[in-house]
Image (cartoon, rainbow, N blue to C red):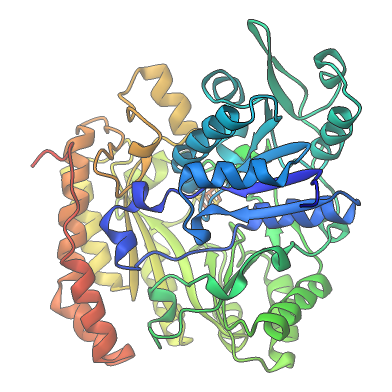
Amino acid sequence: MTRHDIVFLKPGSQKALYGELSDFKLTGLEPPLWGAILAGFMRAKGYATALFDAEIEGWSWQEAAARVVEAGPTLAVISVSGSNPSASTMNMVGASAIARHIKEIAPTMPVAICGLHPSALPGRTCEEEHVDFVVRGEGFETLPQLVEALKAGADLAAIAGIQGLAFRDGDRTVETAMPALLDDLDTLPRPAWDLLPMERYRAHNWHCFDDITRRQPYAVLYTSLGCPFKCSFCCINALFGRNTIRYRGVDSVIDEIDYLVNTYGIRNIKIMDEMFAMNEKRVAALCDRIIERGYDLNFWAYARVNTVSPGMLAKMKRAGINWVSYGFESGSKRVINDVTKGYDTSKVMEVVRQTYDEGLHICANYIFGLPEDDFESMNETLQMMFEINAEWANIYAAMALPGSQLYTLALENRWPLPESWQAYSQYAPNSLPLPTKYLSGGQVLAFRDYAFDAYYKNPGYLNMVREKFGTQTMEYVIAMSHKKLERQHAVI
Ligand code: SF4
């Protein structure tokens, strides 16, 4: 076996985090974007690189650790950036177990952990996990230097000169300065998709409501990194250290789409950008180039109520962006203003109508239990959900995710937080949302589950799904809505 300079591993935790839902194949299985970006980057620098996805391989935590050790890397890196911001914290469950097993088998193998959650809590991660290093931020500056230092047998005093690290030195935790963000994303090579079993990934069920049997193959890509907004419940910028957005050039995005289509026959693509539909000129330029290609693609992408226009939506639809995901969050103006979401709630229905008029489907995101929520405001949200009648709705209970302003507030105010990283999962049996100023986390959780039932069993919703996508998809939704979640903390 080739000895590797660096091995990246995406931990698997689906069963622990999604319970029964993972068996039902409701959840998507996404290729690990950050693992692939970093693996492509390190390989292009000449390092012998491997990338493992324990989730897609179905490896147990012990097996994942054994595979990493077998690859014999100078540095093993567990990457816990998930498919959405909240997934990073939840994936600490698998990351933690795998790191522990690696150290049991190979106590001297250097192990690092990177991603959003470790970047948000570097000191705590160093102290609690069986890792030698936390890589803070993106890792482009840090990882090559760390591998070189380890190869040269450098001591911790020398390693302390590398930016973007946290590590234990005796009884103390050392955190080095954050490196500057990479200016030009086009200097990055293509993510190392070839190191992954791309034919096995599967799109979210709703993304393929037009043909629920065609969820594979599936790919993700990014056209920008970061987000300039400052919603208090959101943690995504913890990875970057500030609220900012950087764009890839249109040519490089098109080159990657060509590669995914021509190499893997990809049709379903998630645009991972936290905020894709923002700069109208850029969206139009990119969509024009995709339209020119004439591929049969089925994309989804994020947008905000205050960043889209009918012209932008029309162009997106022509490019194959069939689904747009809006963070409506709440039907209450008071709740929205409190979390600095920064959009005009009176515009919601106008934007919803424009989106439907242009032929796009909506994946709506709602959050119950934001700090200003009470039963009245949560009912307003539920009424808004019925009114929007989105083809798909992600219905969340608020969590104070590490890296978000809400997490800092929760610590300052001693609000009860989940007892484990697993309990940050919406679907785990011990899931525990944040309390609001007026309600306990258990009350919020019970209301969230009630709203989920009310929405997905609503005849107005089911009829709409049947009319747009056919009886098979409607029956699929009905079967999904009858899955009961085990809840230890719901207060009815
Ligand atoms: S707009 Fe979306 S990605 Fe940006 S900070 Fe708000 S929730 Fe996060």
